[in-house]
Length: 281
Length: 136
Image (cartoon, rainbow over all chains, first blue to last red; front, top):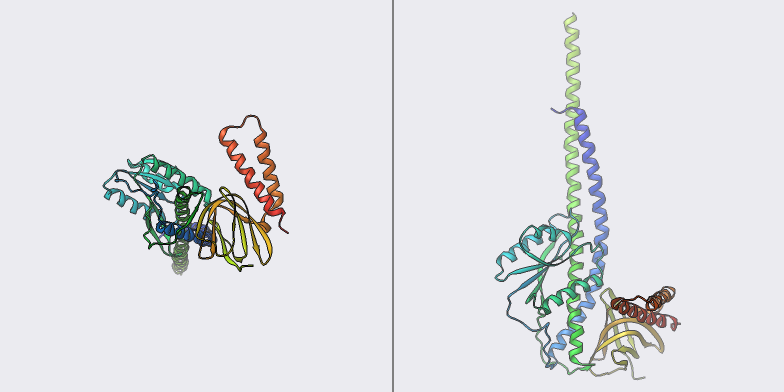
């Protein structure tokens, strides 16, 4: 049996860890709330944009935009959204596992664009080619960051580096549940709709599509960044919460062991004294 | 007055405005664009500039940094890249941004990208100043 001193030292170190995980849990709870608010705030814009695109698809427009045109798929690009930091439970691992599965199944060669350090570090070990990588987006992804990524993705698509682009991110369901998901980014699937109203286009349908379609890509990326960020904080909160609980269980167990050791030591001492006294008689 | 129509302004950062207005003027790509109630269906690109809308007889302003507008069924929806309502604009900061942009523009060794960026910043700052200062 370990000595009381050793056990006491272990309790102290576990307690220190518990304080850290507790603090991290509270920090991520606050960040989660912020990320959730941003996610909600971004929804109306995304919905309206989607609506415009749908109604635009119904309008009799005879221009075919390159971002809408389907090509025979020879090259696929995945945009993988992970976090920079760890200590967030299975958040990155789950998405990376899904991505690996998709890459293994894919019939076409796959290249990657990674957002976040974790995804990059994992796939750098394999032989997958990277087309771009983004790290250090911070806790508060901005629209301009999404725009930068979107511009690069659109450029890759237009130059024929990719015939299809998917985005892989973690959908935020609740603080406890996050779901690895994928959506098709390019070419943009034109929503089917019934014949709608005839629009006046100012300056022209082509110009509108030229500015609207990249914006649609930006919005999708922005949303995935926000979803990912909220999921990350949720996953971290849950992970840190269970770490704090585990630390508590461990401290309880160690305290019990320590008290037992202390008692055993006292008992031994008493029996020594008693036997010492008995030998004098 | 011919009544009102609904004006909604949204940006990726959130829902900015939803009001029933009588008239709105938008900075269209090829000049200003006025919209009255019962306008026919329209989709138009918007430039950097000032949105003016009439709410209960009062003219209010907002600065927009590009985007587009969709008008359908007596409702106008402005999808802005970024937008700020006149009363929310920090005038001092906008003036500062304008001066900074002007200084950068007048610097002798300016490259193509910086030049365009500074011009863009200048136009944005000018729009914000005019949206903020004419707002009572």
